[in-house]
Length: 126
Image 1 (cartoon, rainbow, N blue to C red):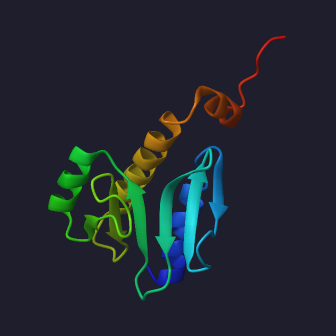
Image 2 (image 1 turned 180 degrees about the vertical axis):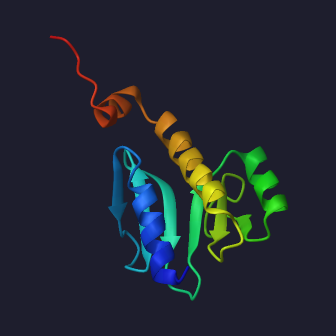
């Protein structure tokens, strides 16, 4: 996939996550995806090959880095809790989808209950 197609694929998948907001707090070459105001994915478009930062359980982060050379400690992030994925085609799309879902779930599950309920559209009696 070329850079534009890769970005479109990433964007479409990330936006399927409930309550996801697309923001550009740094510049227009860095797309930040948030849930409940917290980042769970950052996409860097300023190089020939896209890079995406994703939050990750520290033990899983190590395993993924050992499995794929395109996955490294998070660029400009807490390297224990974030990975950077070079979107060069060497990491299967299904694996990337799982990593995005894992990142979203980590951030969503860490939100206060009120924010979670607002995102899932919970209705309270009374």
